[in-house]
Length: 205
Image 1 (cartoon, rainbow, N blue to C red):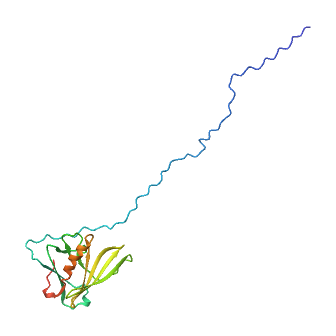
Image 2 (spheres, rainbow, N blue to C red; image 1 turned 90 degrees about the vertical axis):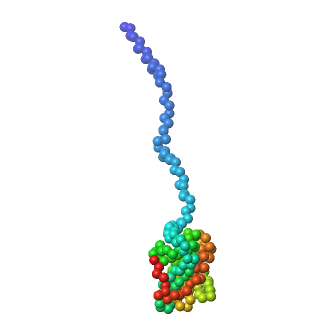
Image 3 (cartoon, rainbow, N blue to C red; image 1 turned 120 degrees about the vertical axis):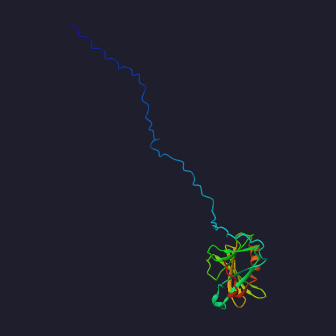
C-alpha cells in the first residue's frame, strides 16, 4: 500500500515589520525644570534726609514802619535775673519780622533768608551724635556764651546765652542755608540786648 509522503513544512512567513529599535528613555520629564531667576536689583543707597517744616509765615511789612522796632520778652533764666525786668532786642523791620515759631513762642524771622530764625531758648541736652564748640561774644554792655552745634560735621544751629548783668537770657539762631549771612544779621540784633523794666516792655501780639 502506498503511503503519502508527509507534507513538507511551510517555511515561516517572512516578516515585513522593521526590526524593533532599542527603546530610548525620555528623561526630559524627569529632569527638574530650570526657571530663570533674575538677579535681585538693589535700590540705590538712600541717605535719610530731614523733613523740613514749612518756613515761618511772616507778616507783611507795615508801610512807613519805623527804621527800628523792638522785641521784648521774659528772660529764659529767671532764677539768674533780677525780678521785674524783661529783655529787649532791636531789629530792622525791613530785614526781620516778629512772628511765632512752630511751637507758638515769639520769634523773629529773616525776610530775605528762609529758615533763618531767632527764638528764645534755655540750656538743654543734645543727642549723642551732636558736638558743640564753645566761644564767647563780648560787646560793650553784654557777654554771650556762644555754642555752635554740629551734626555729622554740619553746623545746625547756634545758641547765645548771656545778659547785661541784670537779666540772663538765651537765644537760638537756626537756619538751613546761608548760615554765615544769617548769623551776621542775627548777631547784629542780639548785640542790642538790654534789660528794661516790665512796666516799659511792649506787649507782644
